[in-house]
Length: 331
Image 1 (spheres, one colour):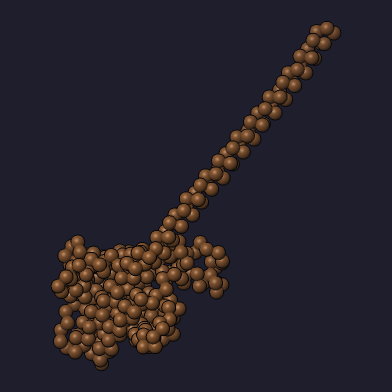
Image 2 (image 1 turned 90 degrees about the horizontal axis):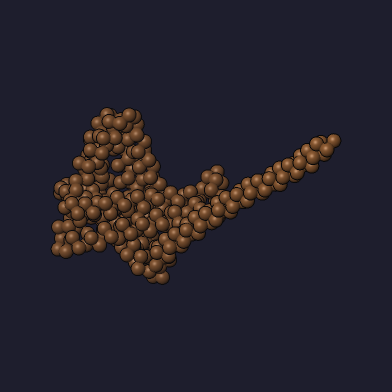
């Protein structure tokens, strides 16, 4: 009996110590989980604060006066390229030669003028900053998909947000292409867009399914050209411009906008068709860019007259971009 009495208290003490150990272990595990949760929350909060700071910094940079003024030079640079390209197309339509009817040819004509290289550097900076401004607006600004509201493309608001985002990204790509062409003259001494386009299309065609990729790319460019023509007729670009106070300026903006968008759209449409045809016939090396598209247009029935109209449209589109540099909201 004495031995059993001695063992019972001992067992009870062991049981109580075991319970205490379990409680302490359980509380320690809870504390570790709570600490891990708090650490995770704090890290997420820090990441969110860093992202918000980056958003604010990017937005402040895009909204700064100096950035906006230099970026507006991108409109003028792009307009100058289109005006020279259009003038070259007009001379080709008139049967007077005209040289290369593409962006590289237009920039080459700028470079051949007195102080041409200085102008090219300014145009390069303007186009590069305009591309950067478009990207900031697309990912951090008014066209960002991270704002409030639905992103469902099946709903009107969602489609509008996606349209704004894709438009800004497309504009950024377009200005980057022009800036890259200017950069080739600044750092490399020149470029041959026709040869580059032919080499690029041939390289893509050699890839698996490359001809289908080329045809799809040509179809997309042709569709963009049609959209340009439709937007020109509907004057969709007016939503992005401030209303000029002068009636004469309002007329010039309207006239150059409508005719210019039609000229730009017709050029893109012809480029897209040329890509599709060259891919469908199995001769992607025949694609020589805008120069080949415009000269191919000249060889069609009534081609010279059509080329004259497109050339004048491109010249007016260049004038529209120059006016846009003054009246674009850039919001």
